[in-house]
Picture 1 (cartoon, one colour):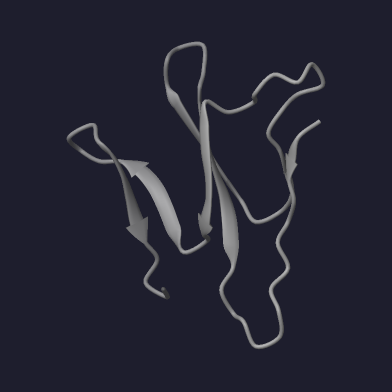
Picture 2 (cartoon, rainbow, N blue to C red):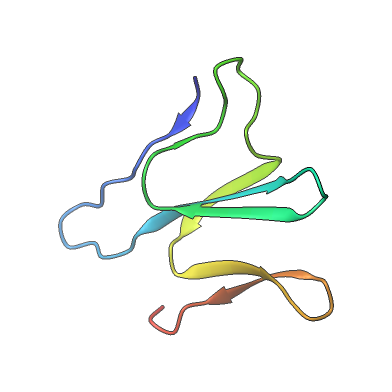
Length: 78
């Protein structure tokens, strides 16, 4: 089973990476998952769990804005 493993940062490094996964539920709604832990990206049948995913900084959050567009926002701490 494919898995995105939790990243460990080296000494003196303070950046934290996160998994950002996107899927669609039965009603057609976007389902967003953000995790800084290990994540399975395939199920036991080796089928993808997410329609799309990326590994990037934990300091962003994906959202749907008032215009219905998928956008990301940086945390104030980044």
